[in-house]
Length: 352
Image (tube, rainbow, N blue to C red; front, side, top):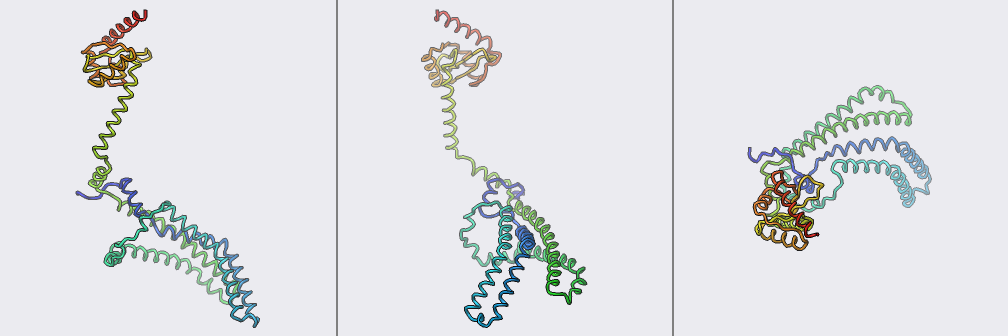
């Protein structure tokens, strides 16, 4: 069907979409990376954090037991010390999670400063457009996807905790230290299983996001044709480039005329300069041209003492059949050989 988007996006289309902030990205990848980083950080810094909090709490309770401490200034100092200790213990864990989130985001979209996406857009303030997004198919899809993730993760949590119910019931009467150890071990086990499941969900969601992104970027054949037209140069520019190319090629051709052995002319309409050094299989056309170009070739040949021979049939045939830089075809061997032999004889007698 006309206008149907069946073609892959061109590099220009991809670059425009990227400049607008349209990239394949999954927030679940960032979430799973942060969860795994938090579990790693808790396993590494958790005991130290618990120790600091325990010492801080013990110190605070000890100070509160003294009446002289229970004043506005004393409580402020106590709270400042407590919160400072907690912040120092939490900072490494928060830093690891922050780094993991940034790296996961950069890995998906690659670092690139996009100022266009930061520009204010009045369309985003349109209530009708916002309502359409809330009740549209995209919103329904995201809601269904979120409910499915909650259901899957909830089921994994239930199946992980159910076998441990008897163990949890047996913890009644344990000392606080033993209970915290048992509960912490159970919580970490459940969190690890949820994290692994969330990673699987994140990978699936990322590939789905890439699939949807590629589908949104697809173009119709008409779009590709219009893009090609817009990228093509105007006729005036193409003509100017062509003229410069012709001028450069003509300048190189004229620079090769002094190395020619003979110039064959029409005598006025065509001129073909031939060179033969013995290393090649046949003489080579180093310059040719009609009218004004022919006149320039003859002028340079006279200035450098290159023999000029009038042979209208041979000049016309060479001009029509052989391009500059090519060796002459076999059908011209005899005629050109006789011409060069004549030129060499004349040059020899003159030299004597």
